[in-house]
Image (cartoon, rainbow, N blue to C red; front, side):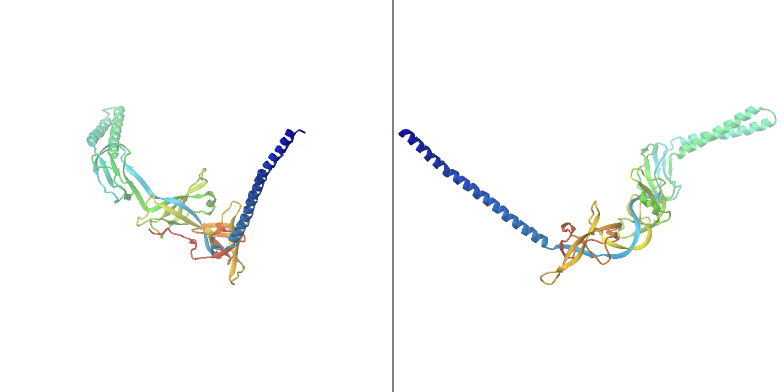
Length: 394
């Protein structure tokens, strides 16, 4: 090998040695970085597990109630609208100009009272003309009867006189009816609303003049599911609550049940009647209606907030003593249990099965719980548990 070839081979070896050193440094750095990442992940995972374990072990604060039996009267509840036993928007049957207004807004009026007259124009003159023609037809008929008795005229003349007299009387009746169409009377006794017209105003036929409502008794129309039909009967006691009079219950009775069920909603319309001598209840008001049904019995009742509603079944959390802590105090945990629910009333729900009287049930804070969770009971603030809640007065 020549000297030049030897020098070239030696240079290549030196170059290879110089390239190995940076590669080793890069490999070492990668190994160090990967080790640091794995170490942090392992350390962080252990810390997270410890924190989660500590959080899981910490008691969750809840409110509770002791399950107990209470008198329970089954009822059907609904919402309805008040309406008058008789009510109408009064109007004139004919068009014309308002000539007389004989009422004030809000008055109680008897049946038949004249409330408004339209200008009659020549209606009364035409009536007098037709009455005179009717009188003449009657006199002609009487004279012709005397002549017929003397055989001075034929039967055909008498028949014509009878027809003429009847026609004249009919025209008088038609004119009197036309005059009556321009007079608005109260069709029944009741309370008037607010006047909607003024003197001199032109009214078309059917224009509302004033509303008239008979307020005693007053009716409430409401709907119940078709399943409730079996529990309804005429004369059944009904109670109504109206937010206009908070805390006051109005008593009435079931008056009628519709003869068909609404096919779109599967509900049936029901009507109840209430005495309203003081006229405080007026049509259009909103009311909460309750119909008592079935016998009074004892049921376990809970606030509705105690129930966790799920598609697969309704559950509650029962609080049980789990042991004693380091300070000698009793510790508690919860057990989730399925329950079968009954009817509701106000803030309460009846429990048919799943819990027993005396068991302690969680009423708030369930969202933080699972089966076996430790709990701390604080009943300083508890959910409402009223069978007949009323809205607060403002």
